[in-house]
Amino acid sequence: MGTVSSMTGYGNVKIQTELGELNIDVRSVNSRFLDFSFRCLEEFRPFEPKIRELVASTVARGKVEVRFNLTASSAISASHINEQALSKLLSMQEQVLALAPNASKLSVTAILQFEGILETPETDKEKFEESILAGVRDCLQLFKESRLREGEALKNVLLKYCGQIDALVDELEPKIPLILHTMKEKLVERLDEALTQTLSENSQISKEEINDRIRQEVTLYGIKIDVNEEMERLRTHVREVRRVLDKGGAVGRRLDFLMQELNREANTLGSKAASIDMTQTSVNLKLVIESMREQIQNLE
Image (tube, rainbow, N blue to C red; front, side, top):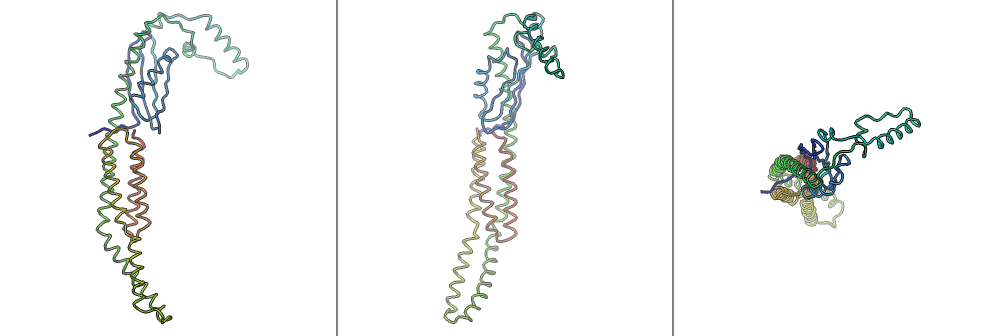
């Protein structure tokens, strides 16, 4: 049995690096495609292409954000301020304040985050990169597991909705013959009354011709309001939903298409409604299908 994945998920790890403790967050929300963003200090920007590759190998769809937050420790104590760069930054700040007196001054934290202000000792670049990428891999694994847990929960919800659709169809199906019979009887009565009056006014039309016309109209009406095909297609689509969920993988787009097909059959059932039972079943089906569609928007 395959697994399905939600498009929403979260993972977090903390690792020690030469620059201090690095907190790695990976989170995602719904998106039609894979949408990646990376929020970090400039020191980590060179790793973005490889991090992007790791994300793409893990995620098919979703708006994914990877965030790095560094708590500098020993690296900061061994660092020093580039006084020339700081002097230039503060000079630029004074120029801005002269033109915009209401602007806020930079905080110490903000100043230290500017590229070139804080100079740190040289690090082993290969070792540093490997520790960063290893941390990202671990975080992505936790992130993936959270998406799978939520995906499994969504799968169970969708299977319950499938059962509700089957129950609605099963409840209506035995009523259809009686509904059609009752409607045909009413139609025969009305046609007989209308055409008999025509016969009395036009002697060229025989009673037998009237009866033939009534049979034709009733037959056409019966074909028009027969919903057996719609109900069978509803069952077929539900079976396909179950099959897709059982197979697993990236199921979102396929299930979204099936919701369109289910909704089409429910609408057709409503347009052919010949009784309050048929109308109510159509309405209830559309409510269940809409609930399913909303949940499916969360699946990868």
